Length: 291
Image 1 (cartoon, rainbow, N blue to C red):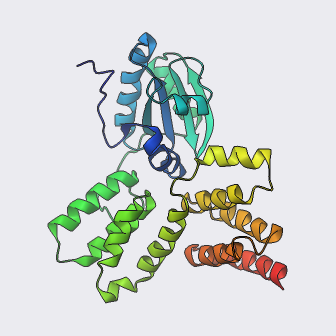
Image 2: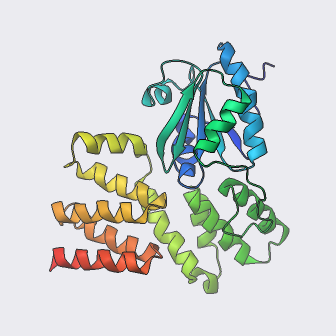
Image 3: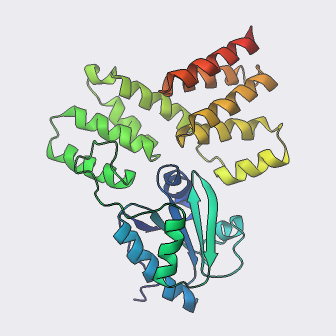
């Protein structure tokens, strides 16, 4: 079989599609840089560049993630990024494209491109899968799954797995694990936070991608639905202040929208965010609008 048609999926390189793009590309780019390789099976230069990118993804071991997009099969994604020639590589950080290049490049040029954006090989992946510094959140989930399977009598592993699953958008699995926890762990702060995050994640089911919502806001900043979903994207992606800014603006524009949803969004977000100073600042702004 032609390797260009069926590239290998690893912890650091995978095929991106419209179905998994939100979860596996945009959400992951909030935590680790993602290189998107737009290619096609008929493209000769693509076949030259692909093994270079895959080699570096493996070598960097989580310093960045490689997402391969077959532009023939995923024309919607190619159109979203305005792809005009192949191969084209885009770098995403924080859910946004920050740079890119076109055409087959030698390994040395790709290394230089990565270095320009502060991307370095990950010298050591934490051995403890519960360690918050674990490089790749998907690899962390896999390690926690193995740990939970090896010690099924320890429900704390299930809680850690639920937290990790929620972080990568596997909300349904996370919810089932939380529901099955014994009472002492069900009331754990981490379990409560997962439940709250699941409420926000449910709002993103079938929602447009982050880039589409940002474009909608650029075209019409009175689009409250887009602002709501944009804030949820930011919150789940780790941009707490960005989320609070959107939710506060919703409250400022129409406190009664969706039966008082702006106020509920802020309160739920306060319960999820660890930064006490940030929460306190936005609580005061919320109070000034309400009272």
